[in-house]
Image (cartoon, rainbow, N blue to C red; front, top):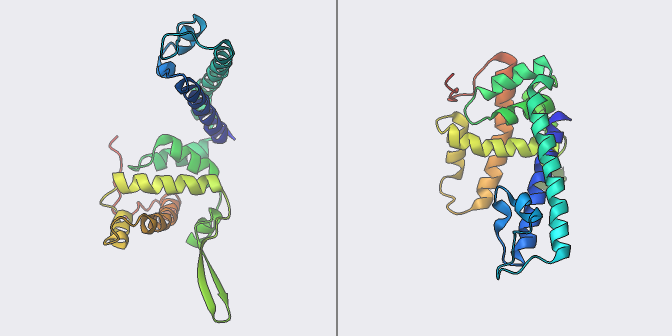
Length: 228
C-alpha cells in the first residue's frame, strides 16, 4: 500500500498540472509552469494571450485546482520523508540489494521488493507466472496457436518489469540479456512490434534473474554493479 499510495499521489500531481495546462492553452496562456503560478493566479496576474483578464469562472476553477495540487504535493513530500523508515527490514534489505544493480533505481527496487519478492518461489516458472509473463499457447486437436502472455497476476509489477527491461537495455549494454535482445531484434529494422514482443521476453528473463540474484546471490550474467 505504501508504494501504491505514492504512485497514486504522483499520478494526481501530474493530472492537476496537465488539466490546468490544457485549460490555459485554450486562452493562449502558457504560465502554468511558472514557479509562483498559484500566487500569480491569486493576485490576478495571469492573463490571456491578448492581455485580457481570465474569465472569472475559469480563474476560480484554476484556484481550486491549485489547492488540490498543493495538497497532493504536500502529502507526497510527507510520504517520501517516512517511506524508507516505514519499509520492513527484510524488504529494505532486498530493495538495497536490487538497487546496487545498474539500471534499477531506488523506487523501482522498493516496488519489486514489496510487490513481488516478498513471495517464496520454488522455480523460475513460478516467478514468470506470478506476474503473467509466461506464454499461453492454445492447443486443441490440429489447431496450435500462440495467444501471447497470460497477463495474470500483479499488473503493476508486470508494467514495472517491462519498463525496467527498457532501462536495463540502456544501462546494462554488456549483459547477456541485452545481447540476447539485440540478436533477436537484429534485422527487424523499424518493426516496433518485434521489439515490443522481445522486450516482454526480456522482462520475464529479468524477473527470473533478479529472483536468483536475491535468492542465491547470483549476479545476472554480464551485469554491472553501481560504484559505491
